[in-house]
Length: 111
Image 1 (tube, rainbow, N blue to C red):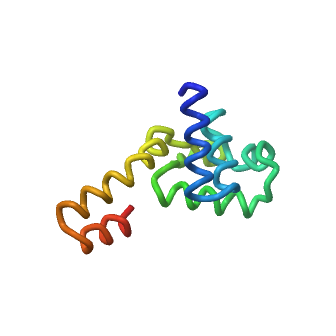
Image 2: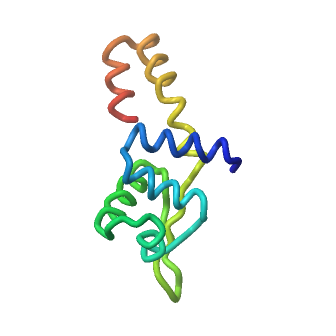
């Protein structure tokens, strides 16, 4: 990813999820797959805060994890999916145009 894309991803994460999730996501985007221990050291956050931020990212499909055969679980951010957050307003608008207020509320809730 380019520096501009990384900066945009960082801003999107901060706007949608807050500063803690932005720090964790930004660290993963810049460095690639990392175990929890290195994330805690890199971000300077408490382990519980990092765990909760990872949960948010994984629940929204913005990060994934992979258990290593001999070693810790590694977490990886999915930058392209973070950039898809920019499309959400268009999805909501299209649902409203096609299906009215119920469609808008449904798509907004799903996203």
